[in-house]
Length: 214
Length: 214
DNA sequence: ACTGGGAATTTTGTATTCAAAATACATAGT
DNA sequence: ACTATGTATTTTGAATACAAAATTCCCAGT
Image (cartoon, rainbow over all chains, first blue to last red; front, side, top):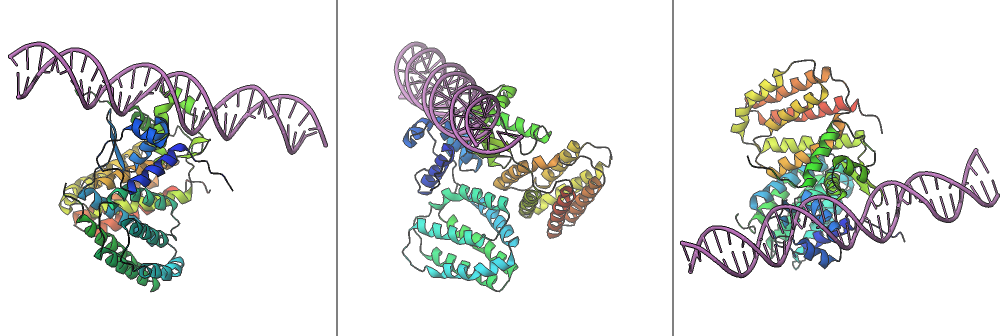
């Protein structure tokens, strides 16, 4: 077994993202470095390094002398982020190998239809969604693009746990994914991209209902 | 006069980007933290914070125990970055207020035609180009997008000083900018976007000639 | 001459300390 | 009672100190 040795700052970053996804940090609240460092069992140095990395992704904000705070959420910013992700995923799809897309299309369709269970925690829905989009983009060889997408999506993570209960949205999302997969099956890349955009815009509007007006 | 007080890490980051743009750091070379910190007259702590921020932008890479190094250049990565920037600027243009675009179009045209001086250092050409694109995107209200573009472009900065001498490219660039401006004057947003994409792709190909095969 | 092993040295990663802001608190004055 | 001002406390920002790798260099052995 290859023992893994990653810098503490990266482990901390991941741990913080995990906690953020679990909704442990309220948007807009300050980070107390000493307290958080103690809680994680590390010193402030690597913690601050992790905080700076997260600030670069838009997860945190910082101001002179006042330290870091979890970035507040806003409808405007959410719309901005969705527009960016939609454009980037479109680019990723556009620059994917068509042959590969055809290969994964059936699996995408399966995944989209496959889990019709109504009872699903919000976290699992999101995880499944991430997985689906991950597969969709698996044929994109633009590494910087994939990297960028990952980071921008990290910046959106804090919006995920704003939605408390899911019901109709799951079905819609699933239907939209099917639509995209079907387009890919038919080798209709432009159609797939349009459907993908619609999926993001639609998901955004469904989500917006849960975000308080700023 | 309001005295400015910015964190050291940000000043260091800017200084490093400046030096990088001036070509003081060769791609692929290691950063010696102690030496660089001494040179800048700061301690390693804020320097490392700046390095981590720059690593998040792709300017630097890091690996466990081996510290930071300036990211090597590659034709592949350059193509990836250009594709990303082209897509993001397209989105920015697309989501700009058409009225505002019409307003700035004459100025864009002026700027594009205005400086036909053959003798221009590489740095001034780049600065002028940045300025032009900055004006082009000045009507984009998507702050996160502008932010992201700035960061991705920062990651491209190290490619700029690979070009040693300019000659024909300047004229081409200028001509392409005119084309974009003219489209905007005619309220032809889709046409402007297409021209913008062509501008990026064209600039990329001109640049690629100067990047050694990996 | 070349390879392998093992100190010595350098360099990074993390913790701790120190200094300077910012915040909270208390007290005096109105 | 409220504001203002000065002081204590907390918290961040930066520097230093320490520990753990990684690298270098040297020498023995083949």
